[in-house]
Image (cartoon, rainbow, N blue to C red; front, side, top):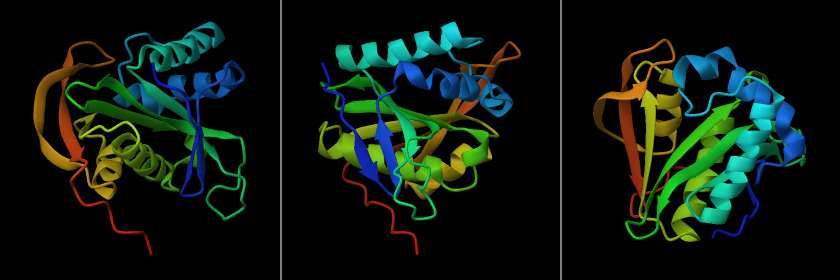
Amino acid sequence: MLTPVELKAYGLLLRPWEETDRHAALRGLTDPDFRRWNSPLHPVHDEVDAIRFIRERAEGWERGTMATYAVTGDGNGDGEGAEGGIVLGHIGVAMIDFRMRCGRVGYWVLPEARGRRVASRALEAVSRWAFRDLGLHRLELGHAVGNEASCGVAHRCVYAFEGLLRGAMIDPAGGMRDVHLHARLSTDPAPAPRA
């Protein structure tokens, strides 16, 4: 079991999902850009599905296999995180294996929060936490080939490109698509602070 914790860093507050966040979850998981690049195992179509998504995140904490967060502004009015309490997106570490000391990160950002490095700031916060507090050594990040925005997030957070996984993701239109694999080790240097 993992004890849910809040993380405050880089103008963001990362907190466990709550059922009251179902509207934000529904908007994020039904967003056309999200659907273009992602193939969730349990697609979300309505509010009932969004609540199931949130409950599955809570169960992941209880099982100790998943640590996921609603990404919100920290409310400090710094120009980047002024939206205190408003959900901007999602970040998480899934497929946590404490024996192998690894996990897989994933994220998405609501349309109105894009272009402000919300995903990069959230990924850096959760990466440092996973290495420091969970004792993980390796975090993997996979994204569909062609998803340049996600590739940029990986590079900004020094997730090294490790190769191509052929046919590793179900394409939303049917068939399979290739995935870029990135990874970061706890021993890798952290990214330089943004000027």
